[in-house]
Image (cartoon, rainbow, N blue to C red; front, top):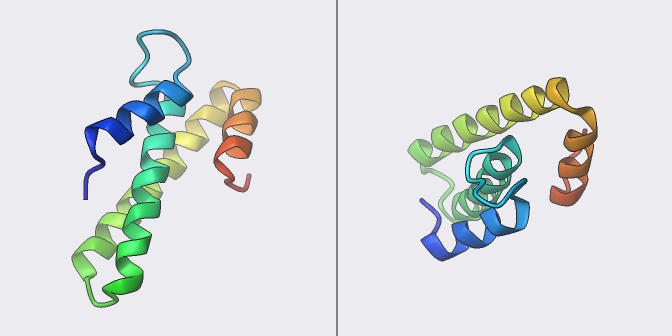
Length: 89
């Protein structure tokens, strides 16, 4: 369940750190968060879709790892991102 290109570009535009940014931790976490939200909606409808559930767990683990990296790199950036995305610390 990949995001549409327009949605992804909008997210990148909102969370980018500099002009040509597409791979900073902030952008990656924001894109993953949107994918996680959409997949969670899918799984509420299709409760027995175990393959999508596994993908969701992998995405959550990757997001958590990126957030951990961001804490080590800059706690200030981590806090701002968590607050903007509505994630708990």
